[in-house]
Amino acid sequence: NYITMANLTLEEQKLLDRVESIICDYFNVDANSIVNNDRRSNVTLARGMIIYMLHTKYGFSANKLANIYFRTRRAIFWHISKIGYIIKKQKTYIKIYEEICSRVE
Image (tube, rainbow, N blue to C red; front, side, top):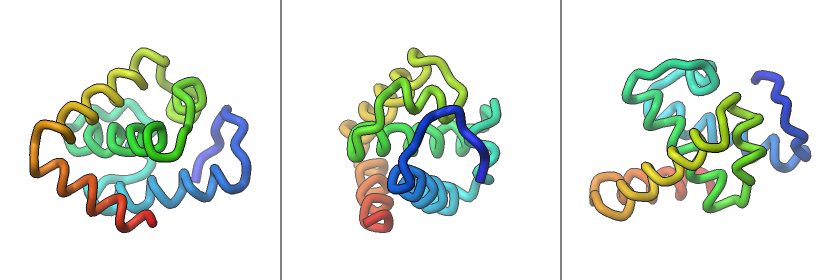
């Protein structure tokens, strides 16, 4: 994978790699696109799903995620808010999120 500035435990790094791999496969995006400034819709959605899942389901802090993905805390909270909203409001995304969660576990 890539080197991050965040101090991750071995368990956190394994979890991060697994979540990224599953979500990138699901949305058919390259893992490097997630870290880069690629703004294509499928990459942005995949990046948001990764950030949302790591924060809400696995307790990664916004600061840690900002360091991992080279984003500001504000950008991290934007992703969390955006994905949280669409998961709650749109049935298609609820199913996508549930399917991804089942693959990670």
